[in-house]
Length: 579
Ligand code: ATP
Ligand code: MG
Image: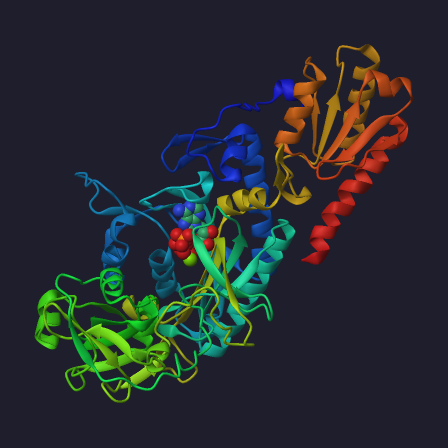
């Protein structure tokens, strides 16, 4: 491709909200253009990269035995009502205004409902299983805060796959195939990724993993142990149990008048205690309507997923004011565990069980109490891990320390079990002729996020440094003094030779000063650059330089094509071999 015949609208100024490097560079390099908040056009260079990512994803899905199909973005709301997800998805679900000829249409944020409907129609016998279906399709999510360029948008491309199995062991196998395919995809895309254990809801266990790329632009946090490599999403990370909080002898409980001091911050400031000496008492309701008293330390955050699992329920939500007042006998803000045993099930975080002379609400308006001790003043019905890990917590696996790292999720694999096959009655007949729900898994990759995450991981001050496998072009011939007859002939010849070898070549044939051409070359980040200029040609050479390195190789124009082809091939093979 010749630059003058192509469309690369590089820009100098980026919007003030473009903070993430990938956001700034994608705009500056002319890869994308924002059309509306959270919706982007892919300009030709950007689209080439997106397509390459798509190809890699498709190849690896096929290699793993998944079968491609294509499902519509427009979906009837009835399917979503079957699973109850019109409510669960909340405002992120994009609904189209009803028309006389079309009632209740949503734009798919994901496709579990549609694919399960297909499966229940056509997969009726164990003999037809296992099946893994996938597609590459546009998804719509009315994200509240679209952010960081294409990292979080309202319309994006996802590869989503769904596995259907006859039993749990088969699901484990299907899951492993997808997991391995994901690893290969990221490796081939040149993405440094980390697999983390992710929250998997009531299924628990090892049922869900996320593939993360560490970057400050990310909105997720993983807790990672640098000693043993254990990594988990913050929601999921399990801290090692903490020891006894102090060796102080137990004090006597003492009520303190704390007028209008309700929040942990207010009370700890008032009592002149660290928040780690306070007990937060939270009253929850389970899905079944049971009240639960949950206790965590004042400096810790409750984790509702962990609480639900400990309580043996699918979900919990904070109880309303009336329930709290009835249970504690005091207005909201003054609850404490002492005296509440027997009023509802009490679940304490493990760190609470280790507290000594703690403070908490006194179950009395405008009063708190100090000097309370677990075992003496209250007795949890259950002690469990029900909080988020914090930076510096012990690693549950090896006793090292957990560190927080900001990251972005580029993929997610999930054992769904029978969540959808139950609600949508996707049943099959097993070997004994008995009807069983299919065991499902789902597997998503954000293609746009791979592109942006690759830039987050591979750039410098001057611009992008594409991994060879997903670069919009593999080679840039930078012809300086293009109007010079000899330069033009040498550059054109090289262009023809490289193209004939099957390489993807961009020829910068613009009649411009060298400065801006070099700047653009650095910005758009084509991995291999060949400079053809009057001066070096007079010395009988052209100059080959990888974008990410300072080394320049000088070769005669006759030898250049062979050398460039070798370099491209070895880069591609290295990425492929690792995978
Ligand atoms: P997040 O927590 O970041 O919102 P998610 O957990 O909702 O993502 P999934 O439903 O697991 O996302 O979707 C699978 C993949 O789709 C994600 O791993 C991510 O790569 C991509 N993805 C999800 N939401 C977006 C978005 N708004 N813009 C771009 N890609 C997205
Ligand atoms: Mg996810």
